[in-house]
Length: 498
Image (cartoon, rainbow, N blue to C red):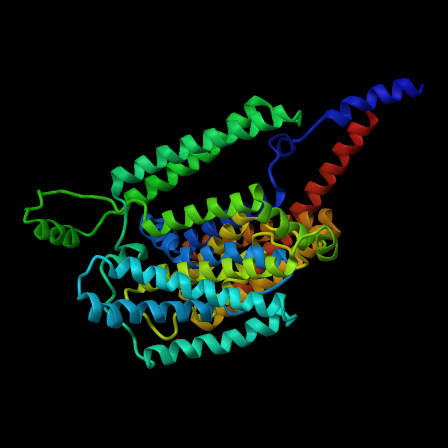
């Protein structure tokens, strides 16, 4: 009897869902789903302008600065620390670089010197790294809580930046420096397609190499069809992203100035796309390097081991104090790199640059799945979190939401993300049901609202139209949820009887 039971249960145990077969991170899948819902909703409310090539191009270059810092914030939070000074440190690095290329170096090298841009960038990166290491020294060796150290830095470094520039806006910045800002520095369509091909080849090689390493160590591997499916999904995303960026055309007036600078005449009807911005390429390189550090190096293993259990890590021989200095130094370096991108995008240094970036960076890391308790976090999750945050702000701006309410939404999203992280660890089944119902409610509300607007219903009702639509959507969502849950219960009962 027992043999029959075990034999019947063996196939049931061997059954795996599609997500289990593909070994997809459910958190990542949830973030992608949230991002898709945001895009669909804002696309409907903006008559498709949100998903236009122009807005996607702007969205990518606006995300880069926060996304770069978010990758460093992952290491900070994983080691059970926090950094509230990243926005102020970005402002100081931007101020130093602005003064270096607009005031100090031209007096030594002359305006237009080739060395102004590279020296300026090195100075900014050095300032960020040194201040980050100093923060880490205070936290690691002096035992001051990271919250206090970086809260003080939030006040200190922004005002040091103000004194550095005398409270003035600094510009114009060096033309070579401006290529890291986005619109002023793109690869063009041809080089962008070359980069896409290289990325696709690298993706295929990475998947094949990972599979080969698992087989060599006798680890279980995904089916070949699953590997091919994942590869095609990644490659399709790469090609589609580059195609969208190439579809955003450079204004004809700017093209004419480019041809005039060459001493040529622009052919009639000539068009050219922007292509991949250099700032986005910088973000991609940062993501690759930080992922390799996290997964393939001793430093990365030490970071996650310390975050998982600091006492055990120290007893095992890890120098946690020096590790803290290294992690904060990496964060400072990335703040300097973000300052390059942010000031180049604005084409000058302003005193309010980086304001509230600490909130956006922490929110991006947490939304991306980094646990505030430490020990858990991914680089790609933080970048996706930054993209979600920027999509929310960009979409609300296009709809006409004012800046104060945008900040309210960002704060609410941060709290909601932490709640999701807590529920995911304690009651994942309840979390999935709650989020499914919320997603269904949003979809139904969007459909009903758009239908009412297109038919001219509830014109002049104001707030009442929003409330009435929400009530109807909530009722419909509850009915659909009850029907689906009962159908799933009957299905499970049927399988049990079978």
